[in-house]
Length: 255
Picture 1 (cartoon, rainbow, N blue to C red):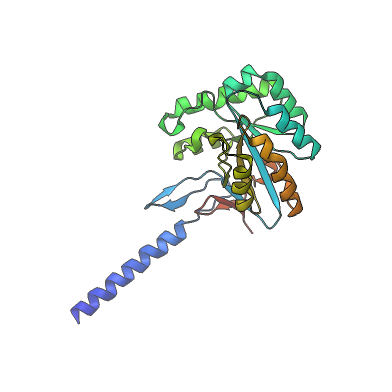
Picture 2 (cartoon, rainbow, N blue to C red):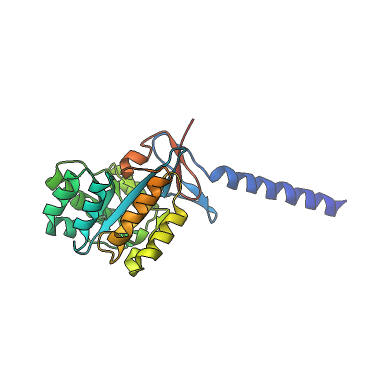
C-alpha cells in the first residue's frame, strides 16, 4: 500500500511539473514580452518566422563585407517586383551610404545588424545599447527612416539582448530558412536548401556578398511565385502587438 501511495504521489508530481512546462512553452503578453520554457528556464526568443495562413515570405540579406553582388541582387528583385529586408552593420553603412540610399529607394527595408558585428550575448547592457543606437543612427542619417528591426550577428542572442532591443523599439529577427550562401555553396545547392524549407511566413537568410547568391536568387523567386508566394519586408510580415511566441520561434497572432 505504501509503495502504491508513493508511486501515485510521484505520478501526480510528475504530471504537475509536465503541465507547468507545457503551459510555459508559450508565454503571452500584448506588450510584446515573450518567452518559452527551455531547459528548465524561461528564455526569450527572437522571431524566427511568422505563423500565418497567408503565403507570404520575407527574403533577407545580411550586409557586412563588400558590395560586389549587391547591384545584381537589386536588379533581379526590381525586375521581379520583389521587396526584401537588408540588415546592415554600421561600418558597412558608413562605408557605402550610396548603397543604403539605393536599397531604400528601390523599396527595400533596412535594419541594423549591429555596429561592429560582435557576439552580442557576451556584451553588457551598455555595450549592447551602443551597438544598436550607433548603428541605427548611421542608417537613419542616410535614409531618414526609423530602423525597426535588428538581427544579431551569428544569430547569437540572450535575454538581455532581446530585452534591450525591445527597449529601443527594435524587433529582434532570426530566420527559419538558412541558405548557407556564405559557405560558397553552388547555386543549385542554395536553391535546394531554400526551396525545400520555405513555408508560409518564412524568413530566409541570405548574404549580399554570397558568391552564388545572385545566381540562385532568380530561380528561387520564380519557383516561389509559381507556388503562390508573395514577397514582403520583415516589418510588413511580423505582428507588432497582441502576439504570442511558440517554442520554435514562431510568432502567432492572438485571437
